[in-house]
Amino acid sequence: MRVARYCLTVVTAAVLASPLHAQSEMPGMGMSGGWRMVPMDPNMIMLPGLTGVVPVVGAFLPAAGINPVSFPEAEPSRVVEMIDGDTLDIEVSIVRRSLNGHEMVMFGYNRQYPGPLIRAPKGATLVVRVRNEIELPTTIHWHGVRLDNEFDGVPGVTQEAIQRGESFVYEVHVPDAGMFWYHPHAREDVQQDLGLFGNLLVTSPNPSYYGPAHREEILVLDDILMDEQGALPWGESAPTHALMGRFGNVMMVNGETNHQLSAKQGEIVRFFLTNVANSRTFNVTFGGAQVKLIASDVGRFEREAWVESVVIAPAERYVVDVRFEEPGTTLIANSIQAINHFRGEFYPHVDTLSIVTVSTETAAPGISDSFDSLRMHDEIAAELEPYRPHLNREPDYELEATVRVQDLPPPIVLAMEADTLFFPPMEWNDAMPVMNWLSTGDQVTWILKDRDTGAENNDIDWNFKVGDLVKIRIFNSPDSFHPMNHPIHIHGQRFLVTSMDGAENQNLVWKDTAIVPVGSSMDLLVEMSNPGEWMLHCHIAEHLSAGMMFSFTVQGQ
Ligand code: C2O
Ligand code: CU
Image (cartoon, rainbow, N blue to C red; front, top):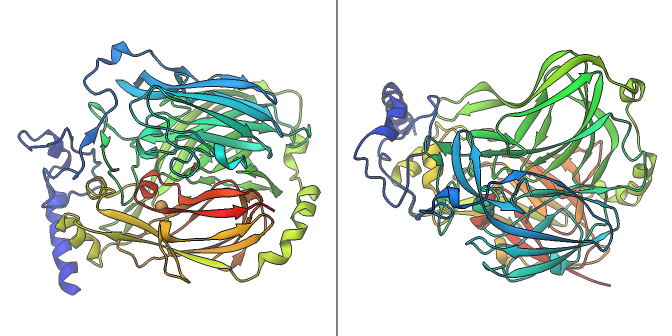
């Protein structure tokens, strides 16, 4: 191993000494198949032997060769208020957008970015007629909603994918209050990235479900990978970036790269955060403002809590109340410890998500007293009572997250196997953009393995009954070829994260997605409340497309 360490160090130093971003401008590099070199920043290194190499799959851009001007321009999201029995038509179509100075061809739900914000009361059933006008087969999955199985939107499990020119009618029953979202369940790495996502806010009949706030803001967090020409192409038959997922280099809030807000002094703003990025976990900070954590995916926390920041993995939602006290500018930002895998170093990195201008006008009415106190929810504590005896018990099932690779370019394999690489518990950024880009879903298989039976992914065969409480331990092996954090999502049910690495969770909340850092064990208590065939998968879009999924059945009673 000494030798490998030595070689890689020398190579690294040599590469670092050369002008890196000259790579993509070098003439005659022979980028084939419609590919362009991935953008890199100076903290990243280019492995020798990979110059001019492109992914083994073809490049995909929507409506390639058609002048963007021929498509309608997308508009910001609009609110659609719905009540029980209402019908909404959603058209999935090609739109034009100007993003970060580029004219881009993207996808949209009703030509909006994000898609329409649906607001509906808890208990309603909404009819949504979806028509597909894009070139890729699609579906809509109602993420986190415990709806009827046949409307879950999973091609090959609950329905056939909707082909171009075809329609599908969803009946979306919303039994839980909270912030949910909807997105395709087919090649999410392409379709979601190109703009297919929207929120579904289910309101509680209880007027004091949340504490007092002056107003509500919705922040849909996303990123996209772009260079001087626009969006970097996606993989045609399989995803690129299968190792770490496709991290973007341009941050967006509600589809905008220059999101701004204004607030009055002392204003308490309730933020509903949703992460729709393919792979990026955000660490959201609110400058010096005070942040109170209220709720997550499928409900409120037992107890409100003060937090410094909100770590939000792909597909998760969090609700926070934030008080803006300092007149001037407050930045909402993604504040991370970026990593250089080769040097084993972290460096602080901050990306602005939104700029909040706070005026000297005082917010009214004065609700600061209620903001200053943290609420305890007795009704949630009471609701959780029947689950408490199960919180500490041993798991019924254990899954191990790992990866298998084949036919990767040798320089990537050599680099991964050198013991100079350090894999952090969380990948906050993509510090190996070329290696990541070149690893496609054809070469990388992400695996959930049942530790009892050895069955992997779709070979796992779990059967439950409505009413079962199932304890699942998910161990994220640090010893695989390329360990990575995984946001695990379970369809159609809700769960509690009861412990992480043996440490009991002291403030429970119902979830549908939770992230397991590298090397960690996460225990979930899943309430099997909804009959049907349901998926369990990683929500990094590229990991999902690279196999990291299976479905289980829940029998009705
Ligand atoms: Cu939000 Cu199966 O996904
Ligand atoms: Cu994953």
